[in-house]
Length: 120
Length: 109
Image (cartoon, rainbow over all chains, first blue to last red; front, side):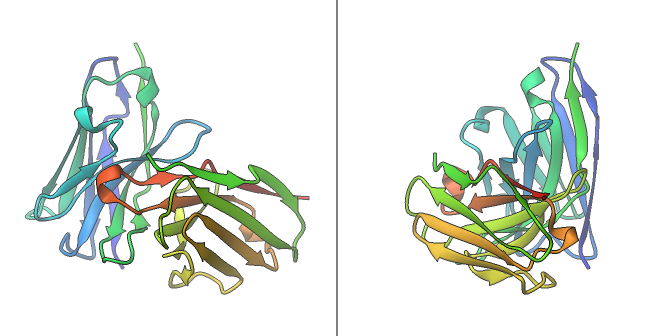
């Protein structure tokens, strides 16, 4: 049973870089994309970006200029960096595994979520 | 961007009711449509993928249908644990990003 455990700083000041990491337990990174999704307080879900073990990345066009995703296969973990944070980036951030077949692209396993607040 | 519009935004229903939630895409997404359930304070849970395929472990009272731009999620015989918020999500093009609907909150009548 694959599980995701995420961690990172929960409080940032404006202009700082948000940095989160997600560990994959009970499985490997191979064969899937590894994704980040966020949810502002009281609002819906927003896709941020993803990476596969080969280093191929995709991201939300609206966030692309600020997003960097990376993966460390030796540690079985992947990470998110979001630069120039503002209050609008305040949200619960989730890591998730995405099925990567030609006909199915769905987020089937999720981390527990990390609350990130951006405030001066 | 592909926009996803769910309706209704919220509904009230009783245990045992049949509930239908609709999701419309702003352009053709074939069957690249997934449904998730989220309860307060918890991560979303995948219910249906590829418009109509039931995720392993999900009760058979959940079903999905549709293709192209119009999709539905049906709960046949609402159970107490089904009171939650449901999201549709399109996955048509990785390069254009994946978008979620705004959510439908199912509440107890």
